[in-house]
Length: 333
Ligand SMILES: Cc1ccc(-c2noc([C@H]3C[C@@H](O)CN3)n2)cc1F
Image: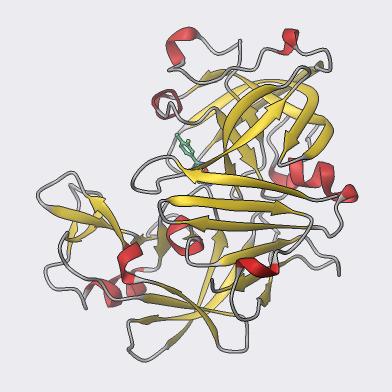
């Protein structure tokens, strides 16, 4: 089997990307944030207090003839920005891009934190990291990808995110028309449940390539590219009037400045993914006439995060390992 679904930026800053998902019988429609950095599929629901909702679509299990509550099961999750949600668990039919997962764990929110309430475009998340970090307790559940994997022509999914334009998540196949050149694969360390890999280094504009092992995760649910301070300083030291503005929350640049490209190395054959300078500006920072940089410090997070700013420049293959070893494939487009 194969699936293909269009994913769309939720705002003019490409802050996050939503895709349509159907749950239940008859189908209840949702717009969910596909997140390769977490492993819970959760939705706003009839259990979510009305004062925590803000126009989101809600899942009502009692209206689905295929919903079954997983009794005694619950979930509770928190995200990198401190937001969180929790609730109860059902199994139900979930359809994404023509691909149907029967008996998928659907986590119904009985509470959500303020940032989810105010994100009215997002009805919940589809976690696409490894099932080893699914939060359902006492019986951990599988991600949508793991649930449908046995039926897939190939045990892969791909992410093709775009700047201010619809992109695509494909399941079970690689669309050769979606990228240029060849795909460079690199091994994945999934010991922490993430799509972890090590980049071989970086390059600012047309300067020399800086060899530096940069270990991080491919995370479609994070907006920014979060890298070590030495990389971030090397980039912004090449931008006139760039400044690390704590009131803006990080590095800002003058909005009318053309920014250098930023490239990062993947694989052991010298391949690089190049983020055009235009994509390194995320728009007004909210303070002064400065704009917020797409590259920021990973600081004290404990890992580097290749979020949407980086992923937007690539066609990315999340390969759970037809040869047993999971790997990430990177291609330009
Ligand atoms: C309101 C809101 C807040 C956070 C997130 C969110 N989704 O994925 C992630 C990153 C960080 C890491 O936790 C896993 N991937 N963050 C989505 C939201 F709609």
